[in-house]
Image (tube, rainbow, N blue to C red; front, top):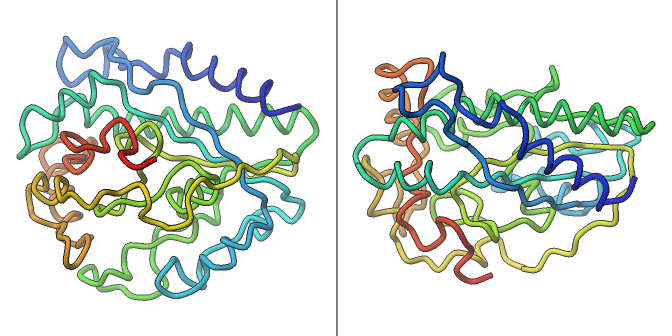
Length: 275
Protein backbone atom coordinates (compact mmCIF):
# COMPACT_ATOMS: atom_id res chain seq x y z
CA UNK A 1 0.00 0.00 0.00
CA UNK A 2 1.38 3.42 -0.96
CA UNK A 3 0.70 6.82 0.58
CA UNK A 4 -1.81 7.81 -2.08
CA UNK A 5 -3.98 4.73 -1.59
CA UNK A 6 -3.78 4.89 2.20
CA UNK A 7 -4.68 8.57 2.34
CA UNK A 8 -7.53 8.21 -0.16
CA UNK A 9 -9.17 5.47 1.89
CA UNK A 10 -8.75 7.23 5.23
CA UNK A 11 -9.84 10.65 3.97
CA UNK A 12 -12.95 9.20 2.34
CA UNK A 13 -13.78 7.40 5.56
CA UNK A 14 -13.45 10.60 7.60
CA UNK A 15 -15.58 12.63 5.20
CA UNK A 16 -18.34 10.03 4.85
CA UNK A 17 -18.54 8.54 8.34
CA UNK A 18 -21.74 9.39 10.25
CA UNK A 19 -19.58 9.57 13.38
CA UNK A 20 -18.12 12.84 12.05
CA UNK A 21 -21.52 14.43 12.66
CA UNK A 22 -23.31 15.21 15.93
CA UNK A 23 -26.18 12.81 16.45
CA UNK A 24 -29.63 13.89 17.59
CA UNK A 25 -29.52 11.96 20.86
CA UNK A 26 -26.33 13.66 22.07
CA UNK A 27 -26.76 17.18 20.63
CA UNK A 28 -26.43 19.82 23.34
CA UNK A 29 -29.18 21.77 21.57
CA UNK A 30 -31.55 20.67 18.77
CA UNK A 31 -30.01 22.84 16.05
CA UNK A 32 -26.67 21.10 16.48
CA UNK A 33 -27.97 17.79 15.17
CA UNK A 34 -25.93 16.98 12.07
CA UNK A 35 -23.08 19.37 12.94
CA UNK A 36 -19.98 18.35 11.01
CA UNK A 37 -16.96 18.22 13.30
CA UNK A 38 -13.85 17.83 11.13
CA UNK A 39 -12.73 18.86 7.66
CA UNK A 40 -10.30 16.81 5.55
CA UNK A 41 -7.15 15.98 7.52
CA UNK A 42 -3.50 16.66 6.94
CA UNK A 43 -1.39 13.49 7.05
CA UNK A 44 2.36 13.37 7.67
CA UNK A 45 4.96 10.62 7.96
CA UNK A 46 8.08 10.23 10.08
CA UNK A 47 10.58 7.42 10.27
CA UNK A 48 10.19 5.35 13.44
CA UNK A 49 13.95 5.83 13.83
CA UNK A 50 13.82 9.63 13.50
CA UNK A 51 16.39 11.19 15.83
CA UNK A 52 13.72 13.56 17.15
CA UNK A 53 12.20 10.68 19.10
CA UNK A 54 15.48 10.32 20.98
CA UNK A 55 15.54 14.07 21.57
CA UNK A 56 12.00 13.84 22.97
CA UNK A 57 13.29 11.79 25.89
CA UNK A 58 15.35 14.73 27.13
CA UNK A 59 14.13 16.92 30.02
CA UNK A 60 12.42 20.04 28.77
CA UNK A 61 11.05 18.35 25.65
CA UNK A 62 8.97 15.45 26.98
CA UNK A 63 11.27 13.43 29.23
CA UNK A 64 12.62 9.95 29.86
CA UNK A 65 9.08 8.62 30.27
CA UNK A 66 8.38 9.21 26.57
CA UNK A 67 7.95 5.87 24.80
CA UNK A 68 9.61 5.89 21.39
CA UNK A 69 7.90 4.31 18.34
CA UNK A 70 10.08 1.20 18.33
CA UNK A 71 9.31 0.72 22.02
CA UNK A 72 5.58 0.69 21.26
CA UNK A 73 6.13 -1.68 18.32
CA UNK A 74 9.47 -3.46 17.84
CA UNK A 75 8.94 -3.80 14.06
CA UNK A 76 7.89 -0.16 13.60
CA UNK A 77 9.15 1.58 10.46
CA UNK A 78 6.83 4.58 10.19
CA UNK A 79 4.85 6.93 12.39
CA UNK A 80 1.78 8.40 10.68
CA UNK A 81 0.42 11.65 12.12
CA UNK A 82 -2.95 13.23 11.37
CA UNK A 83 -4.17 16.76 11.96
CA UNK A 84 -7.95 16.99 11.82
CA UNK A 85 -9.03 20.64 11.47
CA UNK A 86 -12.33 21.70 12.98
CA UNK A 87 -14.95 22.90 10.51
CA UNK A 88 -15.61 26.60 10.10
CA UNK A 89 -18.94 26.19 11.90
CA UNK A 90 -17.22 24.81 15.01
CA UNK A 91 -14.54 27.51 14.92
CA UNK A 92 -16.91 30.40 14.29
CA UNK A 93 -19.25 29.37 17.09
CA UNK A 94 -16.38 29.37 19.56
CA UNK A 95 -15.42 32.90 18.49
CA UNK A 96 -18.71 34.44 19.63
CA UNK A 97 -18.37 34.40 23.42
CA UNK A 98 -14.73 34.57 24.45
CA UNK A 99 -15.43 33.91 28.12
CA UNK A 100 -17.01 30.45 27.76
CA UNK A 101 -16.72 27.62 25.19
CA UNK A 102 -19.50 27.21 22.62
CA UNK A 103 -21.57 24.03 22.55
CA UNK A 104 -20.21 23.37 19.07
CA UNK A 105 -16.68 23.40 20.45
CA UNK A 106 -17.62 21.08 23.31
CA UNK A 107 -18.93 18.62 20.74
CA UNK A 108 -15.71 19.01 18.79
CA UNK A 109 -13.67 18.21 21.88
CA UNK A 110 -15.64 15.20 23.13
CA UNK A 111 -17.46 13.72 20.15
CA UNK A 112 -14.43 14.76 18.10
CA UNK A 113 -12.15 12.72 20.36
CA UNK A 114 -14.50 9.75 20.14
CA UNK A 115 -14.38 10.00 16.35
CA UNK A 116 -10.59 10.24 16.41
CA UNK A 117 -10.51 6.92 18.25
CA UNK A 118 -12.78 5.40 15.60
CA UNK A 119 -10.58 6.69 12.78
CA UNK A 120 -7.44 5.38 14.48
CA UNK A 121 -8.97 1.93 14.83
CA UNK A 122 -10.08 2.02 11.20
CA UNK A 123 -6.60 2.97 9.96
CA UNK A 124 -4.89 0.42 12.20
CA UNK A 125 -7.23 -2.33 10.98
CA UNK A 126 -6.60 -1.28 7.39
CA UNK A 127 -2.84 -1.63 7.79
CA UNK A 128 -3.10 -4.83 9.81
CA UNK A 129 -5.20 -6.42 7.07
CA UNK A 130 -2.47 -5.49 4.59
CA UNK A 131 -0.05 -7.49 6.71
CA UNK A 132 1.60 -4.62 8.57
CA UNK A 133 1.36 -4.77 12.39
CA UNK A 134 0.16 -1.36 13.58
CA UNK A 135 -1.19 0.36 16.67
CA UNK A 136 -2.35 3.71 17.99
CA UNK A 137 -0.41 4.59 21.17
CA UNK A 138 -3.26 6.69 22.60
CA UNK A 139 -5.50 3.59 22.46
CA UNK A 140 -2.86 1.25 23.83
CA UNK A 141 -3.05 0.03 27.44
CA UNK A 142 0.48 1.38 28.01
CA UNK A 143 -0.57 4.94 27.23
CA UNK A 144 -0.55 7.15 30.30
CA UNK A 145 -1.50 10.77 30.90
CA UNK A 146 -0.24 10.55 34.46
CA UNK A 147 3.10 12.23 34.99
CA UNK A 148 5.84 10.10 36.57
CA UNK A 149 7.58 13.33 37.57
CA UNK A 150 5.20 14.84 40.12
CA UNK A 151 1.75 14.60 41.67
CA UNK A 152 1.55 18.36 42.15
CA UNK A 153 -1.10 19.74 39.79
CA UNK A 154 0.39 23.22 40.05
CA UNK A 155 3.67 21.95 38.57
CA UNK A 156 4.21 22.21 34.81
CA UNK A 157 5.77 18.73 34.94
CA UNK A 158 2.39 17.30 35.97
CA UNK A 159 0.99 17.93 32.47
CA UNK A 160 2.89 15.39 30.42
CA UNK A 161 2.25 11.95 28.99
CA UNK A 162 4.34 9.14 27.53
CA UNK A 163 3.20 9.93 23.97
CA UNK A 164 2.56 13.46 22.75
CA UNK A 165 0.41 13.83 19.63
CA UNK A 166 1.65 17.39 19.09
CA UNK A 167 5.31 16.36 19.20
CA UNK A 168 4.59 13.48 16.83
CA UNK A 169 2.90 15.89 14.42
CA UNK A 170 5.96 18.15 14.61
CA UNK A 171 8.23 15.19 13.82
CA UNK A 172 6.04 14.22 10.85
CA UNK A 173 6.27 17.68 9.30
CA UNK A 174 2.71 18.78 10.02
CA UNK A 175 3.49 21.92 11.99
CA UNK A 176 5.28 23.70 14.81
CA UNK A 177 4.26 24.90 18.24
CA UNK A 178 2.70 28.21 19.18
CA UNK A 179 2.78 30.39 22.25
CA UNK A 180 -0.20 28.47 23.65
CA UNK A 181 1.75 25.21 23.16
CA UNK A 182 -0.76 24.02 20.56
CA UNK A 183 0.30 22.78 17.15
CA UNK A 184 0.12 25.26 14.27
CA UNK A 185 -0.36 23.27 11.07
CA UNK A 186 -0.76 24.45 7.48
CA UNK A 187 -4.49 24.33 8.22
CA UNK A 188 -4.09 26.25 11.44
CA UNK A 189 -4.21 25.37 15.10
CA UNK A 190 -7.95 24.75 15.58
CA UNK A 191 -8.11 20.99 15.39
CA UNK A 192 -6.98 17.70 16.88
CA UNK A 193 -3.96 15.43 16.39
CA UNK A 194 -3.71 11.65 16.39
CA UNK A 195 -1.13 9.12 15.23
CA UNK A 196 -0.35 5.52 14.33
CA UNK A 197 2.84 3.47 14.63
CA UNK A 198 3.16 0.89 11.88
CA UNK A 199 5.49 -1.74 10.47
CA UNK A 200 4.60 -0.50 6.98
CA UNK A 201 7.24 1.64 5.32
CA UNK A 202 6.15 5.03 3.98
CA UNK A 203 8.73 7.54 2.80
CA UNK A 204 9.19 10.08 5.62
CA UNK A 205 8.14 13.65 4.92
CA UNK A 206 10.82 16.29 5.17
CA UNK A 207 10.07 18.81 7.89
CA UNK A 208 9.67 22.22 6.18
CA UNK A 209 10.94 24.01 9.28
CA UNK A 210 13.88 23.85 11.65
CA UNK A 211 12.63 25.49 14.85
CA UNK A 212 9.82 24.35 17.12
CA UNK A 213 8.10 27.79 16.97
CA UNK A 214 8.73 28.61 13.30
CA UNK A 215 5.04 29.00 12.39
CA UNK A 216 4.23 31.23 15.38
CA UNK A 217 4.40 35.00 14.81
CA UNK A 218 4.34 35.66 18.58
CA UNK A 219 1.49 38.14 18.13
CA UNK A 220 -0.01 37.50 21.56
CA UNK A 221 -3.59 37.09 20.30
CA UNK A 222 -3.94 33.81 22.20
CA UNK A 223 -2.78 35.51 25.40
CA UNK A 224 -5.51 38.12 25.02
CA UNK A 225 -8.15 35.47 24.28
CA UNK A 226 -7.48 33.22 27.27
CA UNK A 227 -10.33 33.68 29.76
CA UNK A 228 -8.08 32.92 32.75
CA UNK A 229 -4.86 34.52 31.44
CA UNK A 230 -3.04 31.20 31.43
CA UNK A 231 -0.81 32.27 28.51
CA UNK A 232 1.81 34.99 28.49
CA UNK A 233 4.67 35.97 26.20
CA UNK A 234 7.04 35.98 29.16
CA UNK A 235 6.18 32.60 30.73
CA UNK A 236 4.35 30.70 28.00
CA UNK A 237 1.40 28.59 29.09
CA UNK A 238 0.40 27.86 32.68
CA UNK A 239 -1.13 24.41 32.32
CA UNK A 240 -2.58 24.48 35.82
CA UNK A 241 -4.67 27.61 35.24
CA UNK A 242 -5.85 26.19 31.92
CA UNK A 243 -6.77 22.88 33.54
CA UNK A 244 -8.69 24.57 36.35
CA UNK A 245 -10.86 26.44 33.83
CA UNK A 246 -11.50 23.29 31.79
CA UNK A 247 -12.54 21.49 35.00
CA UNK A 248 -14.99 24.31 35.74
CA UNK A 249 -16.50 23.82 32.28
CA UNK A 250 -16.74 20.09 32.91
CA UNK A 251 -18.50 20.67 36.23
CA UNK A 252 -21.24 22.49 34.35
CA UNK A 253 -21.41 20.47 31.13
CA UNK A 254 -20.15 16.95 32.03
CA UNK A 255 -19.28 14.79 30.24
CA UNK A 256 -18.39 17.65 27.90
CA UNK A 257 -15.45 19.94 28.57
CA UNK A 258 -13.02 22.15 26.69
CA UNK A 259 -12.17 25.77 25.95
CA UNK A 260 -10.22 26.44 22.74
CA UNK A 261 -10.20 30.23 22.96
CA UNK A 262 -6.48 30.22 22.13
CA UNK A 263 -7.33 28.49 18.84
CA UNK A 264 -9.94 30.92 17.48
CA UNK A 265 -9.85 34.60 16.56
CA UNK A 266 -6.09 34.29 16.11
CA UNK A 267 -3.99 34.63 12.92
CA UNK A 268 -3.17 30.91 13.09
CA UNK A 269 -6.76 29.71 13.50
CA UNK A 270 -7.05 28.17 10.02
CA UNK A 271 -3.56 28.60 8.54
CA UNK A 272 0.09 28.89 9.51
CA UNK A 273 0.95 32.60 9.27
CA UNK A 274 4.64 31.95 8.60
CA UNK A 275 4.46 28.63 6.74
